[in-house]
Length: 294
Image (cartoon, rainbow, N blue to C red; front, side, top):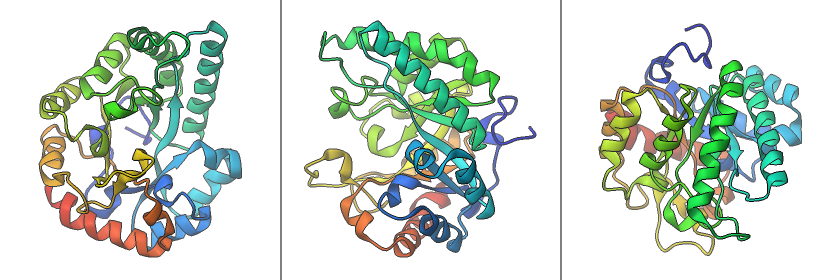
Protein backbone atom coordinates (compact mmCIF):
# COMPACT_ATOMS: atom_id res chain seq x y z
CA UNK A 1 0.00 0.00 0.00
CA UNK A 2 1.27 3.45 -0.86
CA UNK A 3 -1.49 5.75 0.36
CA UNK A 4 -3.84 5.75 3.34
CA UNK A 5 -6.85 5.48 1.06
CA UNK A 6 -5.71 2.74 -1.29
CA UNK A 7 -8.15 -0.09 -1.86
CA UNK A 8 -5.23 -2.37 -2.63
CA UNK A 9 -4.45 -2.88 1.06
CA UNK A 10 -6.79 -3.86 3.85
CA UNK A 11 -7.81 -1.08 6.25
CA UNK A 12 -6.53 -3.29 9.07
CA UNK A 13 -2.99 -2.92 7.70
CA UNK A 14 -2.89 0.86 7.59
CA UNK A 15 -1.56 1.85 10.98
CA UNK A 16 0.71 0.98 13.85
CA UNK A 17 -0.13 1.09 17.55
CA UNK A 18 -0.64 3.51 20.41
CA UNK A 19 -1.88 7.08 20.38
CA UNK A 20 -1.34 7.36 16.64
CA UNK A 21 -4.32 5.03 16.22
CA UNK A 22 -6.55 7.41 18.16
CA UNK A 23 -8.61 9.83 16.11
CA UNK A 24 -10.78 12.67 17.40
CA UNK A 25 -13.99 13.23 15.52
CA UNK A 26 -14.71 16.87 14.81
CA UNK A 27 -18.27 16.59 16.15
CA UNK A 28 -16.86 15.72 19.57
CA UNK A 29 -15.71 19.36 19.50
CA UNK A 30 -18.67 20.68 17.56
CA UNK A 31 -18.70 24.16 19.12
CA UNK A 32 -14.91 24.58 19.12
CA UNK A 33 -13.24 26.64 16.36
CA UNK A 34 -11.43 24.41 13.89
CA UNK A 35 -7.89 25.54 14.69
CA UNK A 36 -8.45 25.14 18.43
CA UNK A 37 -9.70 21.62 17.77
CA UNK A 38 -6.61 20.78 15.70
CA UNK A 39 -4.31 22.27 18.33
CA UNK A 40 -5.99 20.31 21.14
CA UNK A 41 -5.57 17.12 19.10
CA UNK A 42 -1.87 17.57 18.43
CA UNK A 43 -1.19 18.66 22.02
CA UNK A 44 -2.20 15.16 23.14
CA UNK A 45 0.01 13.47 20.57
CA UNK A 46 -3.05 12.20 18.72
CA UNK A 47 -2.41 11.41 15.08
CA UNK A 48 -5.72 11.78 13.27
CA UNK A 49 -9.05 13.56 13.07
CA UNK A 50 -12.42 12.64 11.65
CA UNK A 51 -13.87 15.58 9.76
CA UNK A 52 -17.38 16.59 8.71
CA UNK A 53 -18.59 18.10 5.47
CA UNK A 54 -19.63 21.19 7.40
CA UNK A 55 -15.89 21.87 7.84
CA UNK A 56 -15.47 21.71 4.07
CA UNK A 57 -18.35 24.15 3.57
CA UNK A 58 -17.06 26.55 6.22
CA UNK A 59 -13.33 26.57 5.47
CA UNK A 60 -13.10 25.40 1.87
CA UNK A 61 -11.73 22.08 0.71
CA UNK A 62 -8.19 23.14 -0.16
CA UNK A 63 -7.81 25.32 2.92
CA UNK A 64 -9.09 22.54 5.17
CA UNK A 65 -6.58 20.06 3.72
CA UNK A 66 -3.76 22.57 4.24
CA UNK A 67 -4.70 23.19 7.85
CA UNK A 68 -4.84 19.49 8.65
CA UNK A 69 -1.54 18.87 6.85
CA UNK A 70 0.10 21.81 8.62
CA UNK A 71 -0.95 20.29 11.94
CA UNK A 72 0.71 17.01 10.96
CA UNK A 73 -2.55 15.10 11.16
CA UNK A 74 -4.26 12.46 9.06
CA UNK A 75 -7.99 12.40 8.28
CA UNK A 76 -9.47 9.08 9.40
CA UNK A 77 -12.96 9.57 7.94
CA UNK A 78 -15.22 12.18 6.41
CA UNK A 79 -18.78 12.37 7.66
CA UNK A 80 -21.21 12.18 6.14
CA UNK A 81 -22.72 10.87 2.99
CA UNK A 82 -25.90 8.88 2.70
CA UNK A 83 -29.56 9.91 3.14
CA UNK A 84 -30.51 7.70 0.24
CA UNK A 85 -34.06 6.69 1.15
CA UNK A 86 -36.21 9.25 -0.68
CA UNK A 87 -39.04 7.75 -2.70
CA UNK A 88 -39.23 10.58 -5.27
CA UNK A 89 -37.01 10.06 -8.30
CA UNK A 90 -35.76 13.65 -8.36
CA UNK A 91 -34.79 13.48 -4.70
CA UNK A 92 -32.93 10.22 -5.24
CA UNK A 93 -30.99 11.72 -8.14
CA UNK A 94 -30.06 14.76 -6.04
CA UNK A 95 -28.87 12.51 -3.22
CA UNK A 96 -26.64 10.53 -5.56
CA UNK A 97 -25.09 13.72 -6.89
CA UNK A 98 -24.46 15.02 -3.39
CA UNK A 99 -22.82 11.74 -2.42
CA UNK A 100 -20.54 11.92 -5.42
CA UNK A 101 -19.43 15.34 -4.22
CA UNK A 102 -18.83 13.87 -0.77
CA UNK A 103 -16.69 11.12 -2.29
CA UNK A 104 -14.64 13.73 -4.14
CA UNK A 105 -14.17 15.66 -0.89
CA UNK A 106 -13.07 12.51 0.92
CA UNK A 107 -10.45 11.80 -1.72
CA UNK A 108 -9.20 15.39 -1.70
CA UNK A 109 -8.73 15.26 2.08
CA UNK A 110 -6.74 12.04 1.82
CA UNK A 111 -9.25 10.23 4.00
CA UNK A 112 -9.70 6.51 3.39
CA UNK A 113 -13.44 6.40 3.93
CA UNK A 114 -16.70 8.31 3.66
CA UNK A 115 -19.19 7.47 6.41
CA UNK A 116 -22.72 6.84 5.16
CA UNK A 117 -25.73 7.50 7.39
CA UNK A 118 -28.27 5.98 5.06
CA UNK A 119 -31.39 7.97 5.94
CA UNK A 120 -34.71 7.30 7.65
CA UNK A 121 -38.18 6.34 6.55
CA UNK A 122 -39.72 8.55 3.87
CA UNK A 123 -42.99 9.86 5.28
CA UNK A 124 -44.37 9.95 1.74
CA UNK A 125 -44.79 6.18 1.79
CA UNK A 126 -43.68 5.05 5.30
CA UNK A 127 -42.24 1.95 3.62
CA UNK A 128 -39.17 0.90 5.63
CA UNK A 129 -38.57 -2.18 3.48
CA UNK A 130 -38.69 -0.04 0.35
CA UNK A 131 -36.36 2.48 1.96
CA UNK A 132 -33.78 -0.21 2.63
CA UNK A 133 -34.11 -1.42 -0.94
CA UNK A 134 -33.46 2.10 -2.22
CA UNK A 135 -30.34 2.31 -0.05
CA UNK A 136 -29.06 -0.96 -1.48
CA UNK A 137 -29.60 0.28 -5.03
CA UNK A 138 -27.99 3.67 -4.37
CA UNK A 139 -24.91 2.24 -2.65
CA UNK A 140 -24.35 -0.15 -5.56
CA UNK A 141 -24.58 2.84 -7.92
CA UNK A 142 -22.07 4.87 -5.91
CA UNK A 143 -19.54 2.09 -5.28
CA UNK A 144 -17.72 2.21 -8.65
CA UNK A 145 -17.39 5.99 -8.40
CA UNK A 146 -15.86 5.66 -4.94
CA UNK A 147 -13.51 2.85 -5.98
CA UNK A 148 -12.21 4.88 -8.92
CA UNK A 149 -11.20 7.61 -6.46
CA UNK A 150 -9.60 5.31 -3.90
CA UNK A 151 -12.36 5.90 -1.34
CA UNK A 152 -14.33 3.34 0.64
CA UNK A 153 -17.95 3.77 1.69
CA UNK A 154 -18.51 2.92 5.34
CA UNK A 155 -22.16 2.21 6.11
CA UNK A 156 -22.96 3.16 9.71
CA UNK A 157 -25.79 1.28 11.38
CA UNK A 158 -27.62 3.47 13.89
CA UNK A 159 -29.53 2.37 16.97
CA UNK A 160 -33.10 1.34 16.05
CA UNK A 161 -34.58 4.41 17.77
CA UNK A 162 -33.16 6.42 14.86
CA UNK A 163 -34.78 4.32 12.12
CA UNK A 164 -37.53 6.86 11.48
CA UNK A 165 -35.38 9.90 10.81
CA UNK A 166 -31.75 8.92 10.35
CA UNK A 167 -31.03 5.31 9.42
CA UNK A 168 -33.22 2.41 8.39
CA UNK A 169 -30.11 0.25 8.83
CA UNK A 170 -29.77 -0.71 12.49
CA UNK A 171 -27.31 -3.62 12.64
CA UNK A 172 -23.92 -4.55 11.27
CA UNK A 173 -25.52 -7.53 9.54
CA UNK A 174 -28.00 -5.29 7.72
CA UNK A 175 -25.16 -3.01 6.63
CA UNK A 176 -23.14 -5.99 5.42
CA UNK A 177 -26.08 -7.25 3.38
CA UNK A 178 -26.05 -3.93 1.53
CA UNK A 179 -22.27 -3.91 1.20
CA UNK A 180 -22.15 -7.43 -0.19
CA UNK A 181 -25.02 -6.71 -2.60
CA UNK A 182 -22.94 -3.91 -4.12
CA UNK A 183 -20.43 -6.47 -5.36
CA UNK A 184 -17.67 -3.97 -4.61
CA UNK A 185 -14.76 -4.18 -2.14
CA UNK A 186 -15.16 -0.43 -1.70
CA UNK A 187 -18.25 -0.84 0.52
CA UNK A 188 -18.06 -1.87 4.17
CA UNK A 189 -19.16 -0.92 7.66
CA UNK A 190 -18.48 1.28 10.66
CA UNK A 191 -18.70 -0.31 14.09
CA UNK A 192 -19.84 2.54 16.36
CA UNK A 193 -20.20 1.35 19.95
CA UNK A 194 -23.00 3.81 20.74
CA UNK A 195 -25.21 2.35 18.06
CA UNK A 196 -24.44 -1.38 18.15
CA UNK A 197 -23.36 -2.30 21.69
CA UNK A 198 -26.76 -3.86 22.38
CA UNK A 199 -26.71 -6.30 19.42
CA UNK A 200 -26.65 -9.93 20.65
CA UNK A 201 -25.04 -10.95 17.35
CA UNK A 202 -22.37 -8.26 17.37
CA UNK A 203 -19.32 -10.50 17.65
CA UNK A 204 -20.53 -12.73 14.82
CA UNK A 205 -21.27 -9.69 12.66
CA UNK A 206 -17.80 -8.21 13.28
CA UNK A 207 -16.23 -11.51 12.24
CA UNK A 208 -18.43 -11.55 9.14
CA UNK A 209 -17.24 -8.05 8.24
CA UNK A 210 -13.62 -9.04 8.72
CA UNK A 211 -13.97 -12.21 6.67
CA UNK A 212 -14.80 -10.14 3.58
CA UNK A 213 -12.47 -7.23 4.48
CA UNK A 214 -15.40 -4.88 5.03
CA UNK A 215 -14.52 -3.66 8.54
CA UNK A 216 -13.47 -0.12 7.66
CA UNK A 217 -13.84 1.92 10.85
CA UNK A 218 -14.19 1.58 14.62
CA UNK A 219 -15.80 4.45 16.55
CA UNK A 220 -16.12 4.62 20.32
CA UNK A 221 -18.15 6.55 22.85
CA UNK A 222 -20.41 5.56 25.73
CA UNK A 223 -24.18 5.18 26.17
CA UNK A 224 -25.27 7.57 28.92
CA UNK A 225 -28.46 7.63 30.96
CA UNK A 226 -30.81 9.32 31.38
CA UNK A 227 -31.25 9.93 27.67
CA UNK A 228 -31.06 13.56 26.62
CA UNK A 229 -34.06 15.30 25.09
CA UNK A 230 -32.23 14.70 21.82
CA UNK A 231 -31.15 11.05 22.31
CA UNK A 232 -28.29 11.43 19.84
CA UNK A 233 -26.68 13.74 22.41
CA UNK A 234 -26.55 11.00 25.06
CA UNK A 235 -23.15 9.85 23.84
CA UNK A 236 -20.45 10.20 26.49
CA UNK A 237 -16.81 9.74 27.39
CA UNK A 238 -15.77 6.10 27.51
CA UNK A 239 -16.38 4.85 31.03
CA UNK A 240 -19.23 7.22 31.88
CA UNK A 241 -22.04 4.92 30.74
CA UNK A 242 -22.96 1.29 30.12
CA UNK A 243 -20.77 0.02 27.27
CA UNK A 244 -18.17 -2.70 27.81
CA UNK A 245 -15.29 -1.27 25.78
CA UNK A 246 -12.74 -3.99 26.62
CA UNK A 247 -15.05 -6.73 25.31
CA UNK A 248 -16.06 -4.96 22.10
CA UNK A 249 -12.51 -3.81 21.41
CA UNK A 250 -11.27 -7.37 21.79
CA UNK A 251 -13.88 -8.42 19.22
CA UNK A 252 -12.45 -5.80 16.87
CA UNK A 253 -8.87 -6.88 17.55
CA UNK A 254 -9.70 -10.57 17.10
CA UNK A 255 -11.18 -9.66 13.72
CA UNK A 256 -7.75 -8.36 12.68
CA UNK A 257 -8.54 -4.64 12.69
CA UNK A 258 -5.60 -2.38 13.56
CA UNK A 259 -6.83 0.83 11.91
CA UNK A 260 -8.01 4.11 13.38
CA UNK A 261 -10.09 4.18 16.55
CA UNK A 262 -12.21 7.31 16.34
CA UNK A 263 -13.90 8.96 19.31
CA UNK A 264 -17.21 10.52 18.30
CA UNK A 265 -19.22 12.10 21.13
CA UNK A 266 -22.34 14.25 20.78
CA UNK A 267 -22.98 15.71 24.21
CA UNK A 268 -23.89 19.22 25.35
CA UNK A 269 -21.66 18.99 28.44
CA UNK A 270 -18.69 17.77 26.42
CA UNK A 271 -19.19 20.60 23.93
CA UNK A 272 -19.16 23.06 26.84
CA UNK A 273 -15.82 21.71 28.10
CA UNK A 274 -12.65 23.48 26.89
CA UNK A 275 -11.20 21.55 23.98
CA UNK A 276 -7.83 20.95 25.62
CA UNK A 277 -9.51 19.43 28.69
CA UNK A 278 -11.87 17.27 26.65
CA UNK A 279 -9.01 15.97 24.49
CA UNK A 280 -7.05 15.12 27.66
CA UNK A 281 -9.99 13.18 29.13
CA UNK A 282 -10.49 11.28 25.88
CA UNK A 283 -6.81 10.36 25.64
CA UNK A 284 -6.84 9.11 29.24
CA UNK A 285 -10.01 7.05 28.83
CA UNK A 286 -8.72 5.61 25.56
CA UNK A 287 -5.49 4.56 27.27
CA UNK A 288 -7.42 2.99 30.16
CA UNK A 289 -10.37 1.30 28.46
CA UNK A 290 -9.60 0.79 24.78
CA UNK A 291 -5.90 0.66 23.90
CA UNK A 292 -4.96 -2.25 26.24
CA UNK A 293 -7.47 -4.41 24.37
CA UNK A 294 -6.74 -3.18 20.85
